[in-house]
Image: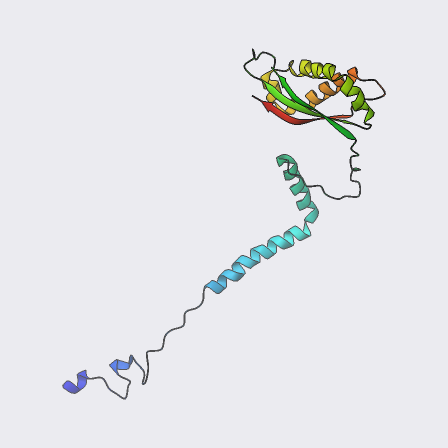
Length: 186
């Protein structure tokens, strides 16, 4: 009876669980990670083909999104606008204004950049700077704090300031553009 319980050396020991001279053969598992490669590359390749085949539509959509978020990048097109020719600049610094209805509790600190095609305008501007500053103070103090804080009204403010300053200067020599180089509402 003892003979039945012992492993048979010819079969390879422990009821065929091991082979002569080594371990049991291990089963090879299928590398499922290899399935991820086509699963990731196929959609990426399809998206690249779609963008390539529909480039004009994708570019139009991208420029629309850029216009909405204000991050448009200039695109070279045959009918692009001419580059802007800049003139000579002068800056009116340290202008502080109390807005309308603020009872002196709020203020606007602003500096203006003025652009003209010729430097002769600024010679005239320097002789009339006190009048120009007073005019700028009058125009800006007519706006309320809410209006001064509204970014959409800045273009209107520029137009009003430009017209007021040019009304002081000679008609031959005028300011072409006005820029806000500092604008702080407190």
